[in-house]
Length: 173
Image (cartoon, rainbow, N blue to C red; front, side, top):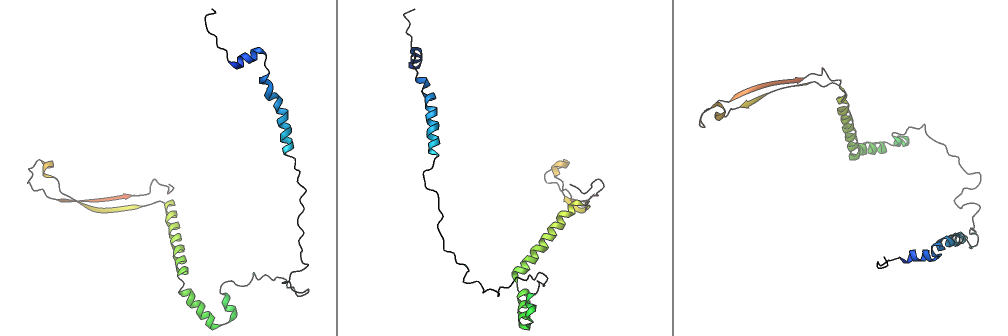
C-alpha cells in the first residue's frame, strides 16, 4: 500500500496542518465596511451661492401707474382680420393672395382625398352587391378532339354572368 504515490493539494495540506488562511476574508469585511463608510464622508466646505446684484426694477418697465392690464379679445372674429382696417386695397390684395395660394389649394385637395378615403373605408361596413357579365373566346386544340395537327377547329364564344348578392353577409368583415 505504501507503493502508491499520494498527491495532496496545498490547500488540503494547509487545512490539515491547521492553517488559518481560509479565515482571512472574514477579517477583511469589517475593515472594508469601515473604509466604505469613510469614503462617503465629505470634507468639502458647505456651498455658498454667489451674490448677484439684482436691480429693483428693469429698465424696460413702465413707470408706476402706466401699466396696462391685458384685455383678452376672444370674442372678436378671427377670420378676415384685415377687414378691421377698412382698406379696399388690402381687401383686394388678400383676395388675390387667397386665390393664388397653392398651399391652400393643396391642403383643400388633401382634405378631399382624406374624406374620400374615409368614405371608401366606411363602405366596407355595408353589404356589397356585385354583378358582372362578359364574353370569353376559345378555340379548342385539334389534338383534344382527336383530329390531325392541320385540322381546322372553329372558335366559339362563351358568355358568362355572375353575381354575389349580399344574402348571407352582414357587411362586417
